[in-house]
Image 1 (tube, rainbow, N blue to C red):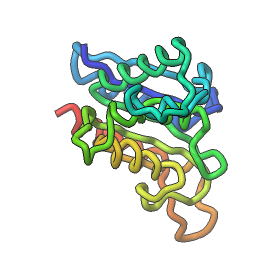
Image 2: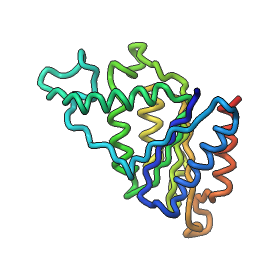
Image 3: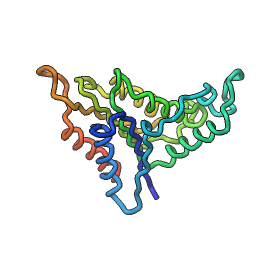
Length: 205
């Protein structure tokens, strides 16, 4: 059965805009057929440990000679995350902006799944995830994010998942408060939801 991998990282468990929007978008995608399901990973309530060794940035044969080998448990965790990502038909990520960056829990996930020799570099023809659709939704109150590819939060997803791993990344910013001043870049929830739904609909066709 095809599945959508939904990743949430907001520390706000009650009224998070990114959680609300990923949930609505995931339901939109799964409604497209009886052969679809949602697999959710909550990186806030069930956080991943930060990388214990730089060896995990590489497949075993490409690890630096002085790198400390990961424990079997940690290696199993990375393998699980890689298999989960590889098997997903679509990836949906909720990433609020905390201190002009993504939550550290989500950064830990990125560190585990970008593995040189497994899914990059593209220049060597290592791109098993090429064109896999990824939608990243970033919520914040401040008027930032006019260019998603250079946004504080979304930029790394375009660089890592898109540039290094050849995935098809779409980024959306939603603002949870009114603009601070006239002319501020401002993306209200309803507008962003419609744009995300349109993107999800294209992925279903």
